[in-house]
Image 1: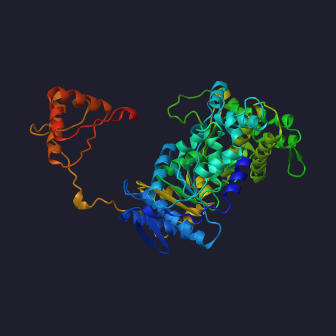
Image 2 (image 1 turned 135 degrees about the vertical axis):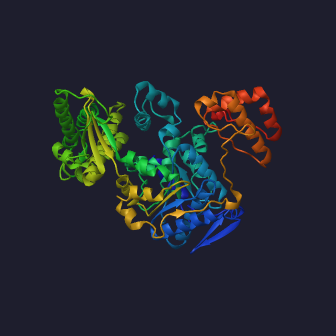
Image 3 (image 1 turned 45 degrees about the vertical axis):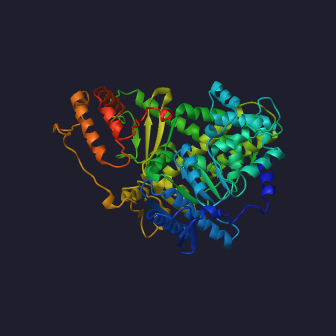
Length: 600
């Protein structure tokens, strides 16, 4: 990874392309917003102008903007044109400009947004990052992970380590990252301004066409490219989940949200994602496993030093205190609860002991556990866990052992860092957390539930230059803002103009809404109950109404039915009666299959 990064740096030199170039053939229309001239591939619609204007304001002021623009109005294209135009203007004034981090909900949506980038005239240096599940191209490593019942992350790290040491089991794709010819190929195809690519194209790195070309790892290549890209596309969890966004690893050396322009597209579920990312569930068995694994660290890496005076054994002993203390607390609690008669469970929470609801506060739980920000929950402890991860990763590059225990140790340290981080959040924002213990014998579970998503929103928003939350349906906007108001950054940096609610491009005179209470001719009430759908008479009457309506409607018609079962019944009855053939005389008929792959 380090060799690939250094070689790409040398190849880039002064050809980084900042400010990013534009493709004149795509710049067919201009839109002036304050000091910026935005290039569009077509005349922008009114909602696109509104989204672009709000985006520029947020970038200028370092603010937070809520942008609601109806589906189909070109919201994503407007976002891209606006932020890239602003970034381009800044690059003309200063040498360092904020990187754009564009988060989408799923890996599959990344391909769609890259398609939008291809439409616009801006040609920045770009990168797409994702998980190993999406980007790993080594089938042997995947197979080893499944066979050993370990995560792909751990299997990948071990294979990479073996590759560095030239040991059996090493990943040949990771080994290829250090080749000059591979770096040149990556630079030519993906590392320059104007090269627009998606995940499928990057995966071709693992399968070069020429026999004299070295293959390389798409996963690590993507993360190296992201370090110096003008814009990075990623799944939302790279922004929202601190265990991902704050991950310390050699391939993410230049990855950070600090000072970035952060865009969260399809943000209508951002509060749910923040709650999940700020919550944690862990069993006493997992805590014991973390403890046992940490004891192996000084046995395997006795020469490691932490800070100026702390040995590896001393660091492991310090890190082990938190899981041991939580295990002891859960054990006492399990003993106390299992020796008493448990009443019948009438609610999912009846079997839990709760803090943060009722008389027992979350702070009381932390006090009972003996956890304080000056002790086991100190920033120093969190930094020690991060330092241990860094030291271990560096040690992996210098040692030749092939034992998989180091992969397990890395996993334990990352779990511990996440545990410390979220317990620190719970202490700082105790009114926003509910703690529960579910006593289930040896699998007693500690649950740390974040109730106020603004707490987690603050973690990344406070670092970013600006944040744009965009979706076709953010409404009710008042409720969304109220959910996130625990964020001080949102309270102080939200645009004073308030949220944008762009109007739809469909004019009132183009829209007609009506309810048909009765079927055509027979005046039978249209009541879509399960019983009626079993009646051929009802389905035939409904079909006759559909036939009459589509006969008067020009163009295409989209007809929704309650379920696939309803669709199957309608097709059965209408084909048997000849109604389907009558519909085919009026419109070209296409029915939705159960599998997307079957779509004609």
